[in-house]
Image (cartoon, rainbow, N blue to C red; front, side):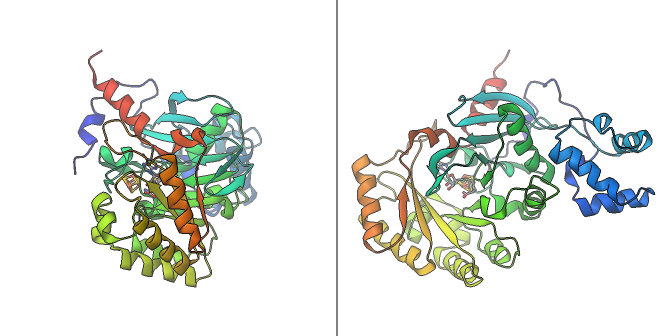
Length: 374
Ligand code: SAH
Ligand code: SF4
C-alpha cells in the first residue's frame, strides 16, 4: 500500500504549523493529572480545577485559568501544549450536515462531520447533534469503495487529537455535541488504545460527559479487537461494516476479509453479544456488487443470529471510483427481503447525510490542490 507520508511534506506550510513536541494537556485523564500535580506539591483539588477549565469552561490557554496560582500555570505551560487543530475548510451550513477539514500540528489533514439534530441517523429517530470523528490519518485497510482508504495510512491519532475534534466542532459551530460516531477517517479498532483513551475523556463526568450509549464505534471487522471490546466495561455501541454477506462479496471489496473471513468475524460478534452487548450491521448498497436478493437473504440470516439491527446505506459516489448506488427501487427491494426474514432493518433515505458517509474526500481534494504549484 502506498503511504501518504512523502506527500505531507509537499503541503504548503500552514500558519499554525509548528514543531510542537510537548504533549497536549488534553492527553491526560483526571487521575494522571492528579498524580502529576501531587508530585509537584499541589493539593488534590487542583487537577479537577484544570479539567473544569479544559472541558467545562473550554478556555484556550493556561493563562485564562485564573483560580490557579501563577507559578502552577507557568509550570503547566512549560510542560504541556494547548495547541489544537487548525480549521482549514468548512463545507455545509447551519441546519445541514457540516464537514470540517482540520490541520493537525504536524501538518496532516483530517476530517470531522457535524450532523444536525432530528434526521433519523443510524436507524434511530434522533434529536441529537452528532459528531463523526476520525481516528487515524488515512486508513491502511484499503476498502475498494472508500475515499479514506484511497490514499493509504499515515499515522494513528493521539487521544487528544480525537477529543480535540469535538471541541473544535463545538467552537466552530456554536453547537453542543451529544452523540459521537467513530465513522470518519481510519479504522478505530486499529488504534484501540488511543481510541479508548479518548472515549474515557469524552465519556467522563470531569470530561465532555457524553453518555456511553451515545458513542458508536464502527469497524470493518477486526475480529481480535472485537473480542477485546467484548470485555470492556463501558457500554458504548458497536457497528460492524459488513457490506457483503458472503466471503465472495466481502473479499472483492474489503481486503480485511482475507485476514478475518466472515466465519471468524461472526464468531467474534457472537462472543461480543454473549457479553450482553448489542451490535448493529452497516451495509452500504453498491449497485451490481452486494445488492442481489441472495445477499439480502444471507444478510438477514447473520442479523437474526446476532439480534443485530441492519442499517442499509445507499453508496455515495467517490471521485475517481466507479461504484454507484442501486436504484431507489432496488434499495427498497433489498430492504423488503431483509425484513421479510424478521430482521430489523432501516434504509437511510435522507439526502442530507450523503456528505457524512464519504469521509476522506475533502482531505483528498485539498491535498491534491495543495500539491499543485502555487
Ligand atoms: N473504518 C471504519 C470506520 C470508518 S468508515 C469502518 O470501516 O467501519 C465509516 C463507514 O462509512 C463505514 O461503514 C464505511 O464502510 C462507510 N463508507 C465508506 N465510504 C463510503 C461511501 N462512499 N458511501 C457510503 N458509506 C461509505
Ligand atoms: Fe478504512 Fe473504514 Fe474506509 Fe475501509 S471503510 S478503508 S476500514 S475507513
